[in-house]
Length: 252
Image 1 (tube, rainbow, N blue to C red):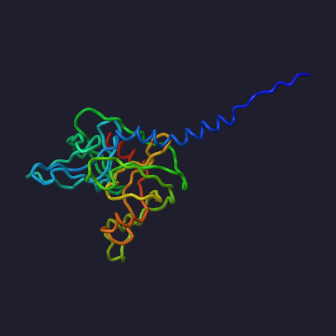
Image 2: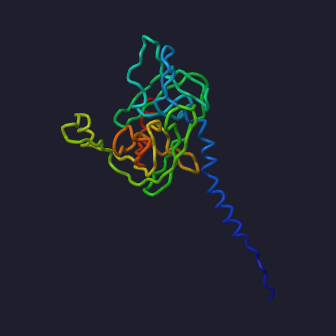
């Protein structure tokens, strides 16, 4: 009886899978970066004339930008022809496009704005549920555009899925709006990752697929805002993407 010896390629397969896993995030970052934009204002009479207020990302038909509601100004100085704008690309001379606010969801701190010009590549919004302990990344402009527009990527695990809460020193500081929110809280994702003010509106995404699972909206401050850059808390909160899908659906 002859015994056929079959050579296995299992070690090679394991090596290939491992390399693919490690290569996933760099490839994903390069894929999503063209869809990351800066959200801000332009005032030709001011100095500087451009101000970056936060991060946004392309969704829908390629002309919609998702960001936080608190990133988009409630008023503009029309006497000085101040405009809402979006900064596209990277470097010291990004493309600047005019933008208009389409709708806000102040409860979930989300906003949709529309840009002029040709459409950009939209990101895909995830339909999958997430679990505590899973690792994700987010890309944005953490410290603004002091040296130019250069997107930065951070990563961290979901350390908790927890009801949203606004910390105050005493109940006397709670507004009527905050009291109503405390009665009917919704869950947000808490990340053990360091974000900064400019990250507001950054997409949180799957490292392999680039699908967006949440939108960064605030950072826990340990002491004062002035020490946020030098002494970050590494506790960041993000709004689940289902609320963004609902906002897009209501607008359509």
